[in-house]
Length: 311
Image (cartoon, rainbow, N blue to C red):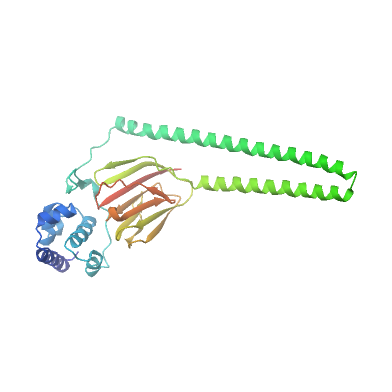
């Protein structure tokens, strides 16, 4: 935000608060934003905020708390040359009282910690492989039984047609034709059902369990098909600004999803994971290949979703 626009934002928000007869303590209580950040916004000291992402989110929440139209307010001061930056989540956290604070640094994991963290993922992977093997064996057994039953039925029908042929050659020909038609229809139906099952299985996503850490939730081992997948971003109770990046930091999509709208983002086959930054998590639903993801945002508005893929 440039200096002239910051001053205008701070003055307008402060005047709106005073017109409502509210104190900074009242705004902190309703937005869960720490009081010193609110004061920094009013005094145009935006360099005191954790980063550009939080600057946008905090101003949006402040505007809504003092009765302004948050979307219109942000568009009024939007600078088209700005690009939203990835939030520095290592310098911010949401405490037990739901107030956003900075200064938390995560300790570096040791080799033993990494090994312990990997064990549940390995166990989950083995279980998933075992389940897939059992399902495949059941499907193969079912297909074999259906084929054998169809063959026996065809043999009995042909024998019956030969007996009837002695009394009426015309009737016998009609019966054989009917049997062949039924057998062909049965094979077609079985092949179609098997194809549909394989297609559904190929697109299935296994999210696993998410772990909450500060203002973020991370799904460390998401099983996805070996092809491009699609993420659905939906605003269900008000608009929500979001940004989707891959594991290398490349931005796949960013923007505002309006109320009751859904934005679909294609994640390429080469992506090993994604990071979703959310400015209004309370009004946002995220799905992967139409499977809903539990954000576990704990009533926090500013939130981050991380996913690591396995194929």
